[in-house]
Structure formats: C-alpha cells, structure tokens
Length: 325
Image (cartoon, rainbow, N blue to C red):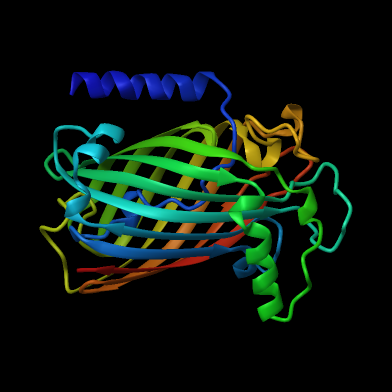
C-alpha cells in the first residue's frame, strides 16, 4: 500500500508540474456514474457532436470495453496501480476519437482553429470499489497512435457518405503520426448518500503521458432509484434501476496534442501555439441511465468552455449500451 501511494504521488506531481504531449481521451468509463454492478460485462459507448447539431472540435468518439475476472493476472497487476482494499474489476478496450476545426468544407488550413486529429488506442484498466469506506480507485493504461494511422479521416468520410452529407475536406493537414501512451488515475469518495435514491461524490483525476497531461477535480450527483455505485461490484444488483446524474469538473491542462501536435514528429503542418491553449477548462455532463437486470442504457449531453483562446464553447452528446453477465 505504501509503495502504491508513492507511485500515485509521483504521477500526480508529474501531471501537475510538467507539460506532456498528445491528445486527450474524450471518453471516460471509470466514474461511479458509469458503474456496472457485475464482475463481467461488455460496454459500447458512442459520442458525437451531431447530438448538439454541430460538427466541430471533438466530433466523434467510439469506445468498446470488456471486463472479465480472467484479466486479473500478473501482467495487469504489474502495469496497473490498485490499492489493497475492495473488490476489483479488470478490463481491456479500444477507443477511437476524431477532432476537426469549426469548418470541414475548406481545403486550406484554418488558422487559429482546431487542427484535424485522430487518436486510436488500446487500453487496460482496473476499478476498485471499497463498500465500507465508500471510496473508489481506478487506474488505466493507454497505448496507440495519434495521426493518419488512426483512421479518423476514413471514419468521418465513410459516415458522411453513408448519410449523404457534406464530404469532409482538410484532413491532409491533420496532426501527423506519433506514439500515444498515457496513464490515468482517479479517486472518488462518497460525501452524502441516502439509500438507493441519492449519492453525492467528490473526485480527483491525474493524467500523464503522450496522449494528455492534465489534472481535474469534480463531483457527481446521482438521484433516482439505483444500487449504490460504492457497493462492491458483482455483489448487489437490482432487477431495475434508473437515475439522472450531473458531473461538473474543472480541468488543469498541461498539453494536448490534438491542439499542439505530437512529442516526436515535427512534420505536423499546423498546430496551435502554447499561448493559445486554455489552461483551465470547465466541463459539465448531464445524463440519464436506465438499467434492467444485466442491460444498461445511458444517454448524456456534455458542455465545455473553450479549450483554446480563439475557440468557442463546445457541446456534444452520446449513448452507451452495456450488458452484464
């Protein structure tokens, strides 16, 4: 426990004190509001700004993950931080994110706008829930690529073609290929709870690596009818639950390569300067969840203040389908 605490302190210190590089992971699946009360499950998440009737900045995200007890092995325990308390859920997944400027109809570089960028990563993660002290710890390791090899251009073109929408232009200026490696830790603690009807939590997050360097603090309010997310996974599951949640956060940003380019490859034709990156970003997420036995369905809307000085606030939405077994 002491060695894990030292590692955690070092990660947070590096995250808050240094500038890392590369694109942020936009899809989050480790928070208590995302809890699936099963030792095994498959989850598919899809996010897009068409839910907000726009097509700019963070334009699309897809995440698929599988949680199984069999993933608790020597390799994952060597890579992932976990405390000695509680019951753990180990998982693997794949995530794809795409980013564009405010217009995709121009062949020219749109200066002082968001660069084109794509990120494709594999991930392994663990969520540890302590039902006695109402706390939760998560750690995740991401490895992949940012750039042309991520296939964001091809993904957007195929979707727009299928929908008979405007063909995207300008992807030839996207952030060039670079390694995407990141480590994230999150700690959550229940502040107030009332049976199956109300839960208020506080949390802190640290990200360090080539995908993103940032720190965040926030809170989550859940209300409705649900099994507490701080019950040990797989022990309790209601036949039916439904709730709404609100999740405000404050991010401190070190470096984001979807805006600033990669760590090793200087061939990116266009990137934003350091002085144009917003160092503090406010985000809020509002969602509704409906669950019946092993089936879990979520819809959410998210808002963010401007992530760069010449940009504007952004909105997007998404859906999630999870099956526990």
